[in-house]
Image (cartoon, rainbow, N blue to C red; front, side, top):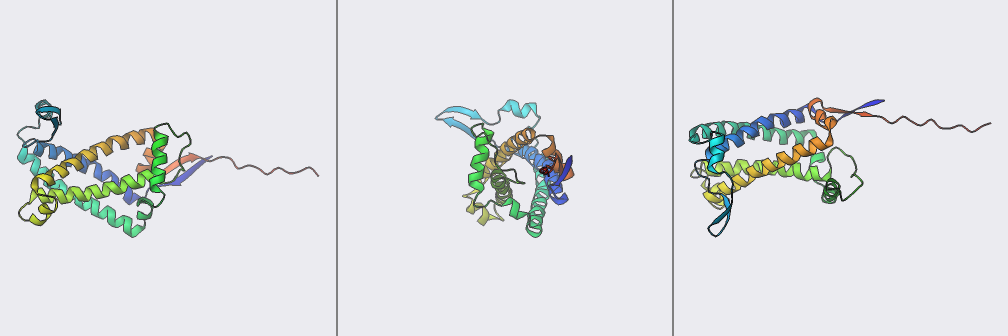
Length: 228
């Protein structure tokens, strides 16, 4: 027997899916901007171990000499990113959804259990709830990262008008570095998130589209009657 379990409200689904193309456009246009000055690399002395984006990367994706285009798109989608994020936070506060998303006292312990289970070290799965401890921590961290991206973006976009903000982040170069690090964080989150969704299966994915899951309900046991 099938059982319908309501999981995600319409507003949450809208905010989630709108953020996908917005964030993609932000990262893409950010690469067009980053091409003009890409100093970040991992090196020991004069030996470069990791060059994040070699020139062949820019050539393959046709990112070179598109700085003005990148800046135009980036600043347009910046407003959409900010508005979508603000509305999402307001909705969770007003609706009370924040109680399901913000980490609680058990979240750190539950996150450890989830990690051990995903690595195959722990055999029993953690309790199945709407958002486990790991999800609470990560989803809250993503909101804070979004705020960080917005603030560091303003700090490097208008370093004169927002001089106090730029100084707060340690200057223009440091603010730009943090902006870059946060972007790398989004990419890592996206990869892990997609992998977790694939592992959870279609039922979990479609719930973010339809708002509900369909599960098989275990048949109720009929109480046995003793013989007269």
